[in-house]
Image (tube, rainbow, N blue to C red; front, side, top):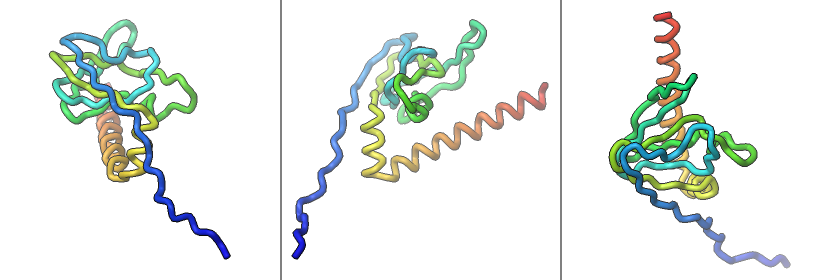
Length: 139
């Protein structure tokens, strides 16, 4: 005779995302610094910049629903993760920071979230490929 465990599975626990408000020009994440979270824009716009040879190059502008900080967040094998770009507020901005564990648990509970993340990353890769091709052709 075997005993059967009839207890319900324990739901994943989440670290609550933290809301942050930034004013125009404030740095949210600085290129080259430790970046432990992924960020989601709740309100306003965030400018993504890359510093190259002392000059800031705008990589894009993100609006409500967009996310950033995913590259060091997803590539992290060991801590700490280093930000590859700078994120700066354009006007007043509200973002939420989400821990790696929370995102992974939410993807486990809702695979659609993981799929949407992959779609966005795929679109960004395609845009970078197009940018590289334009650079080579104009070259």
